[in-house]
Image 1 (cartoon, rainbow, N blue to C red):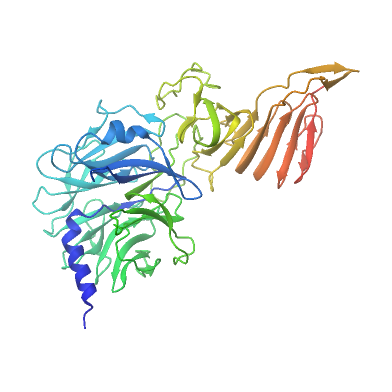
Image 2: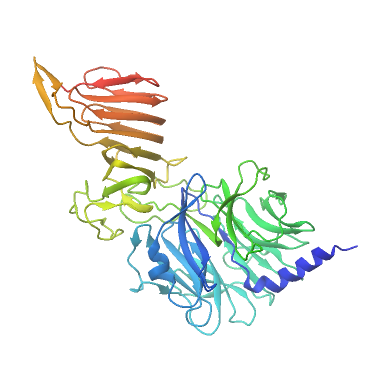
Length: 530
């Protein structure tokens, strides 16, 4: 006997396919910002973006995204990040029809627009266009259009030109997701129920991946080897993963009453899902770990939202131009991290982004390719923003978390710093970031041929940090290096004091032939030269 609940769910899914949320692929990299759909007080869909903290809370990222980019009448939804994490395609009903737009964003401000306006319209006309998905190279977008009468798949350039139709089956073809290798996964009801198909970017080599039941919302893993999607079971909707080359599906979550609409995180360790609506009408963003396979623990609740897409942290090539995606199978490009994401964690934190930029004044927050807006020389951090390296921070009364936008660091290089003024730099010859303590102690005096502290007690310049990944540390004298440890540097009248709070510091003393190993709980003083 057929389960009545299963029949009911299937009918609802088929009826709702034409307005389902999009599917997409994740692009590899460090986890950046999540663009998602929020609801206004009147129930309209609007796009916002936020960073996901390690403890699973959302931190607002770009307030101008809603205020000046996508909230311009009608509804905005279907957010889709490009492979470099700097351009967002989305759908808006501002003209009365669903059409696709794009906006190029820095995490701290808007980038120059190729079309010369704030938001670039990519599709126009009476026919509707929705569910955009970027190619890995960033040069093309696959989307769903209704020009033929039924939803079919089309492809266009990133500027909206050279539109080409990819599917011609007359069925409802939707939810495209473009893999790193060039395959497009999508959902079609050509056989009577929603199934997942694969084809190449020319609309050829069609292959049906699922054959029974109901399957929705395919999303590619960052490496392009695994596909996650929603499967309907008698108990509800269940997340499933499969490697198309092996075609052996594996359930990775417990069944739930509502579809999850998954998308991978750029580092491939988590699935971002939407769950709902709840009895109160809210849809929630949640995280599911993919490291252990099957979901053994409750999902990690992030907050109210839906239809999320997770961008890789933007990286910039040494030339200053955002890199395109490498060809499939080619090694990742070697990139210098010329920008970082700074998040204030507590207290008061300020940043001087102009420091150390030889070609710019200290009052400018602008790189050679115009990626940053003009800001005051010293600005208070109130939210997570993108800041160029070679910036100085004042954490005397606060704490800042910095994530470097490096394409070569795995896991990403992060630093939580508090206590004083420091310069975050990354010499292009080493690609290893450095935290340099700034400030000399005042009130030092000479006594009996040695430097001593004056009678009046003064605060000594120091910073304390917890770094993950490879880092250099430096004070007035000497330098250190670590890999994932807690440490403190103090500039004293006698020299620079390096202290290992947790794990080990390797300190370079110019007066000694070999580096000094400073173990947990111990300190080492590098004295000034004679």
